[in-house]
Length: 335
Image (cartoon, rainbow, N blue to C red; front, side):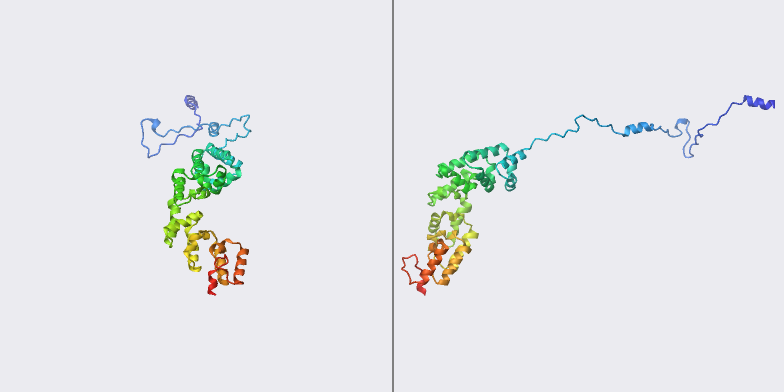
């Protein structure tokens, strides 16, 4: 018993550890002299409260004026131009659809152009029509427009009181350069004997090479001499305005093939081409064919419907008139 107590008194107290002993190193790991390299070091994770603090963004600072709406941005140049033209009754969007460069025209330039025309007594209604027919005019500055008005007054001999009428009838004149379009056309018209160009100012915007000469050449190609062709245009300058394919050609073919008349009549009455082929020329010619009469072109086309029917009835129900009478018809002798 005493030996047992002696052994117990010399023994150190041993308390079991709460942590399990470290596992032995894997067999695949080589042994090292330094115990700290025998296994990887495991870094401790931060406390859960610290992780939560890092992951949450800071709360925004509330300004006492955060509930007020943002101030509107100033209107752009495009909006200002649209509002300005709208005040004149002009649809800016429709104009830029036909003339896109207007988008880049500064507002001061638009205002100066409008102010110039208003100073010349054009009213807003006329401006809407002018810019609607020629949007290019709105993008031009007074520096371009003033020479046009000077040309019309001094060279084309347009009266000051007639300027508005000239521009209203042909707004495209405003967009034509004087040196390369208006002045050459004026000289050409004067050279063929059209002295009163101020009565035919709508022709000034036409190209001499691309339009005027081409129509003279057409009549020369269908049988007229150069002199007779010029005579026709001198007598009826508006002949320059008609399309060759849609007007001159079909009406000339009908005159020669269906009506069978002499070219001399066209030389004397070139206004024939100003009448509708379907609504005036054909119906009246067919009516004359049915009645067996033939009127000169001016009587055939210029008279009203009532007077035309009266002339046909009188010619058919009476004896043949004298050849000097306006009722004289060449076909009466054939009967």
